[in-house]
Image (cartoon, rainbow, N blue to C red; front, side, top):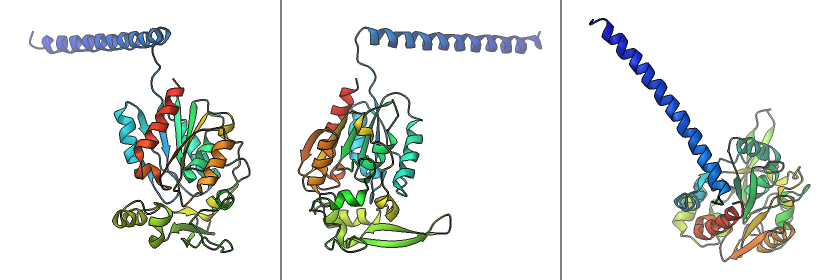
Length: 291
């Protein structure tokens, strides 16, 4: 009898596990049914996932203040790394990343990240809203350099004829195919003025300058290859009136052309760092439209 009891216990455990699995399956089915009935009863759909895309001379950590606020308000948030290697390859990378996000998406881009989302969202039915935060929103065939130079006000260069904007350091590097690429960094002594409009302490600006991620000259000069997503997806735009990287006039031009819902704030180019609450409010307005 002592030899049979363990077998019986095993059998009971197996039956119990099967029962739990069945119960779990029934619970999941019931929950799905309840969600379906809740939607039919007129209750709001789940909140969309907010995908935050950084631009040049920054990284995903710049979104920390925005991400914390969105998460506190019940949003799922993700901030993937933007390669900053080439506009169309960066957009292809983000487009593949977006395929891993289930359900509706609010896609947010800052600075160069705006050009990336403009291409990456094209043809993706899950992207329900675009949010441009002091960002580029190019049309097909336009590049970043042309849009910056179209209006006065950028502090990236005080010499329009210079081959490299005077506020930038050009650093050559060897690419995978053996050719030479060029990385562009904002000079440390220019960073506080150009990127932050002198709105943060020198110490904070120095730390941000030290941790900046460079963008390639190729990415800055590469024409946008696709029909822009803002032609088919509703968009929102935050204009930073104190921007010394992208002139505010250029931001207003791109926002108007995209028929974006536009908000203006007195802030530098890195408005998501200095005023994350204003950025969060605009994102949540866009998110509310998807529900």
